[in-house]
Amino acid sequence: MVYLWSVLCFSGLTVALAIWLMISERLLVDYGVCKLDINAGEKPLEVDGGRTLLSTLYANEIFIPSACGGKGSCGHCKITVTAGGGPVLSTETPYLARKEIRSNLRLACQVKIREDIYVRIPSDLLNVRMFTSTVESIVDLTHDIKEIRLRLEEPDQISHRPGQYVQVQAPSLEEPVFRAYSISSPVYEPNLVELVVRLVPGGIGSTYLHDLQVGETVNFTGPYGEFVLTENPSVEIVCVGGGCGMAPMKNIIFTIYNKWPDRSCWLFFGCRTTKDIFYLEQFEKLAKKHTNFHVVYALSDKLDKNEKWAGETGFIHLEVDK
Image (cartoon, rainbow, N blue to C red; front, side, top):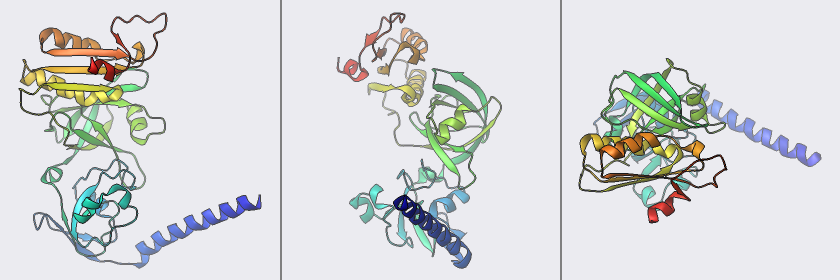
């Protein structure tokens, strides 16, 4: 019992000290106004020192991808800091390769602005916008996956490439919290963003999205991502996935057959049981219209007596091998 109390007291003192240090820095240390230079003068800003680089960029509508909401646990918010960022912190090194450190890559959520700072940000990220949308429809695809269609309000259109994603802003009392979701709607629907979301128990983003009602407002940033469809129509496309991994594949496939009706494409989709099947009828209908589109669904779990399934069984990667 004494040992337990010792651990609790030590943990409490450690937390209290950390909170005290954070409050002291905010109240007692004044870094003044600092210069934030982006891409060698392309976008110069004057900002208040003391905040993280990530939160400062967000406050100035420059949206760097961050799946953990700036907690330093995802490693997505990498940008180049050429000067003024201070030494690389121990909280950054698990997410940075030696080559990246030598190239001055940093985690924007861990870099504090304490002096003039000079950064390089890819032009694609400078074009990312914050969108306001309204929930147009919600469809239960399976027991734990929903299709959520968002109609854009401001701006009222988005330009994205098949395979890219957006970051949905979830309610938070502290720093903005964003979670990444692939766009499942095709590019020829520029005034809509459709998401395929699996519920993760306790997940900040998925629980928020699964609790939405038609007509509610949703804010998100985007588009992001370098995983995109090649524009070369002679390249055959093979899509392999399962669950909510359907989202980017649906975007890719419907975009293909809107733009290149004769292009060759395969879809391999794995489900556990018949209850996990969705979109199959849509894809079979598309395959009848386009003979170069091939659809293979497979069930990995043993079928119950009441389940009727004439398709493939086993793990989906084995169907790809075949």
